[in-house]
Image (cartoon, rainbow, N blue to C red; front, side):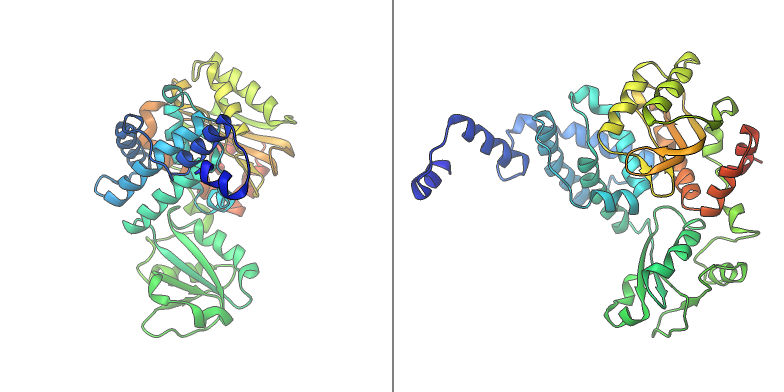
Length: 382
């Protein structure tokens, strides 16, 4: 290729240029990897571990398996050769599919030492796209259309409230009334609107932008949601998360001023109690260097390599003041330490955490907590 290009464009090239082009072609799947480079065992193990972590059986999804077999060998090659491939949708994927994204990263961290690589957020985002598509094919999630008079701006509060009472795998799309003519309604399992609209052969649930108790009851009668009693805040009871929260490792009104300081001090305390080994601190720091775990809600969800965790524990930190984490200023931190033997609990734990993060009222209550006992109560401890 370079020889032909040199003849036509009158340019010269070196052996280093040949090597560089070859690397780019392999990394981007224009040139096949040698057969001995393709480790199908890694694909099978990844499918098995993510299935366990998300509580979804992907074993029968041949399309997902084929996609992973095509994607993973070049991905490992790219990472080993430090050839970074940017994913333009990483930010959007992290926000929209945060549960799937972080579950995959937690699971993959187990293989970093074995493969001699460090996964970055762009590569995790690529894998998230494959798994999220598989979830949608399996109909493990539901597509919900939110219709608001003025579109996206007025829908934010409504979406956050609905998220607090729906499984984290459900996906949402927003449309204004003016955009309805371009919508294919058969693609949606549920349509919720803040204004009166009529759609042939579709049930539309009209609600207030604030989602009142009566609105929730109306949604409930559509057989879309489970039975709901009491206030919305009562629905976000972190039954899985609370099993792994130790009162001794809830820190209230701390004075941390940087993520490095927080990770070092909390990690040291965990190591002293043998929840993790000292290597865990480094794996958390390395994870952060590959992509921030902070969110616009003023929260952060850092985690390290599960191979450095002896016993699963989730540390909760409520800092006195917000400080710059990566992109956002945070004051609430959930440090995730999941041991390898508890990988199957990953989805349940992260789902509880993201349900809390998506509920502005519960975040407000956590920020008001003055003691670790009060934080436990706010997390939903009975």
